[in-house]
Every structure is written in C-alpha cells, then in structure tokens.
Image (cartoon, rainbow, N blue to C red):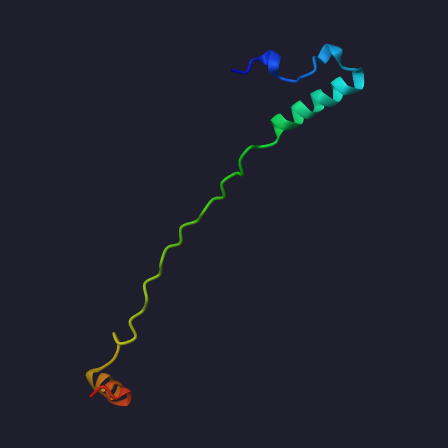
Length: 72
C-alpha cells in the first residue's frame, strides 16, 4: 500500500523561493477553478392552446369544406 513517503513530492522547505511561490500559485489556482460546469436554467414554456378553426363554421360551410377536400 502506498504511503505519503512513497510520493515523489518535494518538501516546500527544500524548494527555492521561486519554486515554492510557483507551487503555491498552482495550488491556489487549482482550488479556484470550478470542477464542474454550472447548470443552466431551463425555462418551461406554457403551451398555447391551438385554436380550432372549425369551431366558428356553420354546418353549410363545413359541408362545403368537406366537399372541397373530397371527403364526401
């Protein structure tokens, strides 16, 4: 089983000043970046009722329309 001694990490006290600052900057940068994308909001749309065009037809107009369509 691996232990912390098996990791090839250099101690911060053994690093030069520039190396230590760069390592610290990389650690801070890694913590600030989000790990997952933020969810986008989805809007629910209200479906509009379809208007029934045959609602206002008279029986004579309906018969004429059916005749023009070749149904009867």
